[in-house]
Structure formats: C-alpha cells, structure tokens
Image (tube, one colour):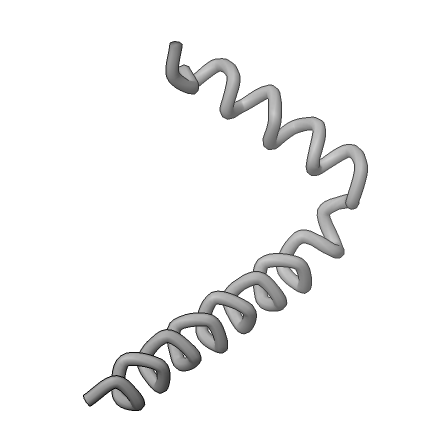
Length: 50
C-alpha cells in the first residue's frame, strides 16, 4: 500500500492549486533551508558526543 505515481501526481496538482505556481519555489526554498538547518543541528549534536 505505497504511493503510486498517479497518487503523487494528484497530490502535486492539489498543492499547485492551493498555493499557486508562483509560491511553489518559495515554499521549496524554505523547505530546503529547514532541512539544511536540521542537518547542521544533527551534525553539531554528533560532534558534542565525541
């Protein structure tokens, strides 16, 4: 019961309708920054243990 290609396309279309094409790059940029900060935090946590 995984995510099929058709389910993924439907979800992407819904996101596109809700946020509009103009806001998608900004949302993705914010998400990427969040992931980067999370990874840096995990790296610092690992360095503190050593």
